[in-house]
Image (cartoon, rainbow, N blue to C red; front, side):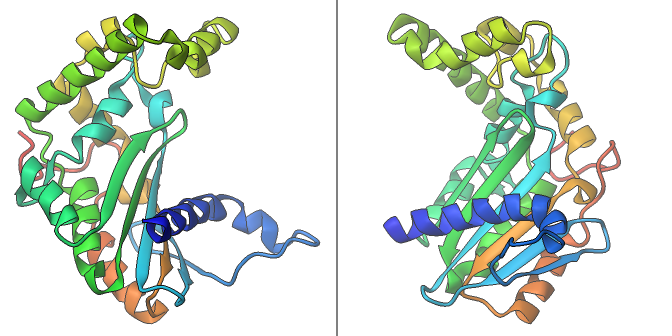
Length: 256
């Protein structure tokens, strides 16, 4: 488990690497680990770093936007979307998706922040094909099922209510941001509020997906036990054909 945690951390660090690599290339005294960077035909940015000390591969996928893309009065939309794309994608329903990850001892999670939606995955090197299939399904073919949406939204509301009733210190950060940054987008709660979550519909989540998720906004970093040339081919197959953002996704399986 500690090995997986280290690999997840490396994957997340590579996500940040994409953002400052261009600046660091010309910065005096800045030394970066050896990596390769390229762009897929659809605009997806990729960073690869081979690391062969353990037979693991960690992937980090970042989509700029996060809760800053939430519609006014519907704070929590990005957070619900991040939760929902783990509840069934491609040919797998929610249970089958979770079972596919757990059956090989992998880890996959998605979360929304203020400025981005981040997906992290860590699998044994021998299962990298399954990892890429699950990640590409989640990002390109999420089911966004109505029954799973209802469960995710209900749980989000219950979590906020429970925090207020038990230990409101868990909400201090959001209350502080709302007070200090009142009227500014950074002051809105990433996870939403009870009232804003109640007003979010599945169509709101689908509109968020169409507007914010696409190959032209995707940053993928992969670190671990692989050969760069082979991983390039795998990533091209997994993500190279994904559509761009802005509502041109078309009808993916499960989205009606």
